[in-house]
Amino acid sequence: MPDWLPWLIAAGVLGLVELHTLTLVLGMLAVAALPAAAMAAAGGSPALQVLVFAIAAALALVVVRPIARRHRNLPPGLRTGTAALVGQRGTVVAALGDGHGQVRIGGEIWSARSYADDEQLPVGASVDVVGIDGATAVVLPRDPHPVEQGDL
Image (tube, rainbow, N blue to C red; front, side, top):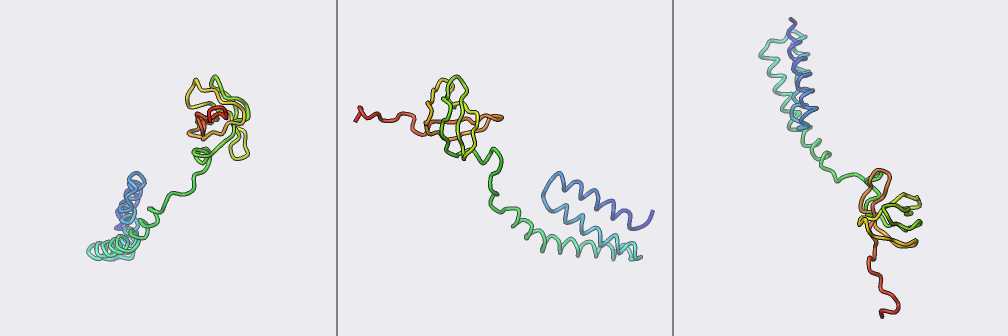
C-alpha cells in the first residue's frame, strides 16, 4: 500500500465525521491530512509526514477555525417563506368562524382560522398571525375586546 493512501483515508473519514458533528475541528484535521499525503507521495519520511500534518493542523485550528466560528455566529438571517408571516398583521376579508375564513396578509389572501376555535371574527377585523398550519394562517384578534361607542 502506498504511504499516502492512509492519509487520504484519514482525510475522508475525518471529513465524513465532520459532516455529522459540525464542530469544525475534524474538518480542519481532514484538510491538514492532505499536505501530509502529498509529503508521503513525494517520498518524505513518516516523521516528516507527521510534522507536516501537525503544522497544517495547527495553522488550520489557530487561523481558519476562529474566522469560521465568527461567521457561523452571525445573527440569524431574514425569515423567509411561511416563517416570515408569523408576527405580521392581517385583515379579515371573509369572516372567521367554525375553523375557517380568509385574511389578507401583506397583500396576499390566506385561508385562516382563529387561534381560539370558538372565536368569531368579522370582516375588517385586524389580526396578528401567530402561526402557519399547512396553508392556513392561525390568527388572534389585535383588539379582542373593542370598546363600543356606547360604553364610553
